[in-house]
Image (cartoon, rainbow, N blue to C red):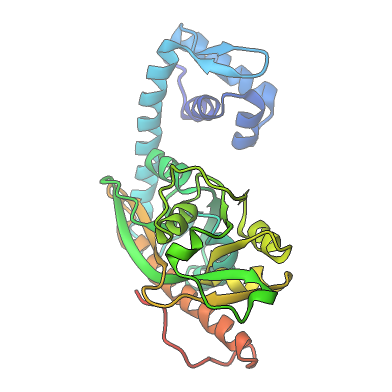
Length: 321
């Protein structure tokens, strides 16, 4: 135990998480042989085997599973010590690990990154794009500092800060541009294309249609909003997308966009972080920057839709906090 190091614990945690030497080594930015040596030295120092080695993957032993729980607590505490030091500054400096769900990242990040770096020039921004369940897991484990997701997530260990509300719009073939906009109930009888299971946006769209997510559907699922819009353009069906995605996703397909009448389907976008995080004050400031970035993004989209010069502000209501 005298030779136990934080580096070994981080390598162990990566291997326990990935269950594969190659992926764990890539995650740790070291070679696979170097990772293997460190894990063997860790096991030798402990005097116990932590992993069962297989041809394609590795699995934790019984002791390794219990050891992993303690290691994650230790690494989280070490990271929070670093956060405590950074919390002494009014502005965030150094690393900020931020997670974003896929139905937000491609549309908000171009505006957000500029606003963040302008406000915090010493910030080392690291972005992680993945589904909400994975972000919640990584936030709880201390692998990211905060996440931008659709609220609520209803996790007692997290602070939830609403940022803005966003409407869903209907995307359908351009030949249907003059047709009445269907209600949520009517959408149940149409071929509604949705994101594959695991995306919270899928569940929100089904909720608007009053369709339980557990019921089998006669439709096609896609892995991205871009795929769904292209399928609509090919005449396969209709889909819902968040309003922020319209300028990016609808320009390269023969589709039209329609807004629903009241009650309009929408989602609340927010930021979450651990209640125990020493960076709460700084993350609250970051949330204000995200709101400004979202408003700037919507201003730009509105100006482009009205054919105004790029920097000219369109007349519209701002995103609601």
